[in-house]
Image (cartoon, rainbow, N blue to C red; front, side, top):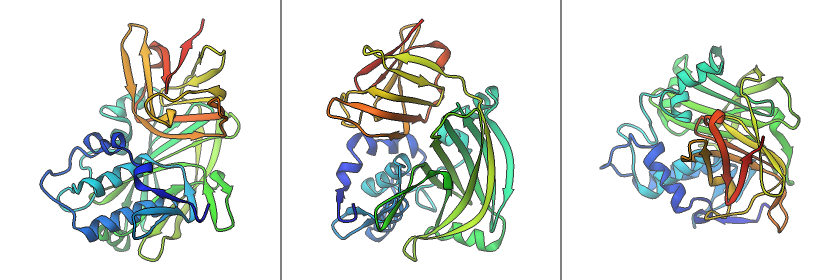
Length: 338
């Protein structure tokens, strides 16, 4: 994999670039990025995704690979369009991590299902405010904001060159000789004076309660993406999301919660997007259809007949599963049975 290159156009398509309209709607319209700033932002975000940029704006895998693409797409959209907010690159102001990653009124929705958290963890240079914790037994997710608690942390945030990420050792997998895999999704959005973070992971085995080792990691983009732990802690996830079963015409089932869908041994055929997991919609019992905004995906091996040994999709929405009758992934329809 070390010598395999990927064109930017294969990673960020036209639809993903349009994320700037929804994810970055608070940006000013007139400001532009100079070429040096564009290169720094793109290089930085690719490095977070375990990649390295060359002069032809292609990327190759390096050291570490993580299955994160919404945060990557948003930052790349800035590079492509040249849009930048007043005062800093990729700043979204006035929102909590919950609002940013789950939409308007997310706090009240999360509180109603017992998923809203109110916990602060003091770490080196930063306080980590845990805002929500989701668990459906297999899918787990946390949103948080990192705020500087000393001058050094404030300097890092104001520099614009460094970043932080959430990480858990349970996600680590063997890679190639010069790489390792972090099988987790992480999004990072910088806001004035803080970092808004979302971390998600699919457990290998279903559990109603699980304690997960976590760390806040400082990514030194200036020094080649070196990593420094700013502190370690544990989070206990307890199942707080209900699930429903839906079935396709082959009799294969998926499990849908309000923020994810998972399945083992399912056939999912592509529609417009060659990666079917990025194209999801729900049909409700009253006949209305809603397109679900995808946050990330985690899929296993597939065969030529579009059969996946496992799959998982996470959302930027909180879906009303009590009223869902059908779920379409790609062009494969899963219906509520019974």
